[in-house]
Image 1 (tube, rainbow, N blue to C red):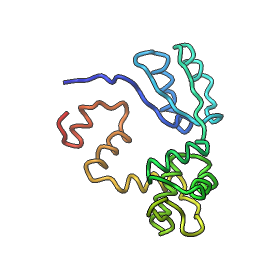
Image 2 (spheres, rainbow, N blue to C red):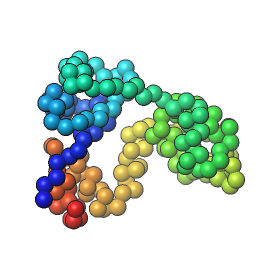
Image 3 (spheres, rainbow, N blue to C red):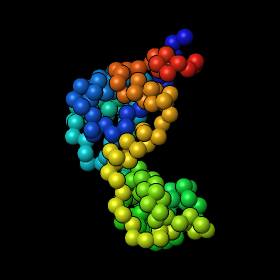
Length: 173
């Protein structure tokens, strides 16, 4: 059975290649389905896309780096209680980027710099977390083969249907 998507979600619109950005502009102008587009503030220089979105009555929200209390909340979600010094180190080394916060915590744990007994804290000088591409690659590398096939199918396909994904990964939907 064929299922149409309920919403189109595109993250990091500011780094899309020209062809993909043209397709997103077309979809925005067509109004065929609701869209959720995310990009870094100040990094999307595409007046045609912004006009297409505005013509469809799009609402925008600017998301920025997490403030210190947001960094603490994310760290506590991941670790439980955290020391103020750990929050300061996360703020200094990640500028409040949630992906880099997770990457930094994973890296510091792997390097033996993160004590999670009681209140989580650093046991030595914090290292700079791996760049975003390396953090993403580490997450992709941790996928099992079925998850990896699904990710590859989505990444390498033009508009992709749930049916095609289920065929590629041999899962019934």
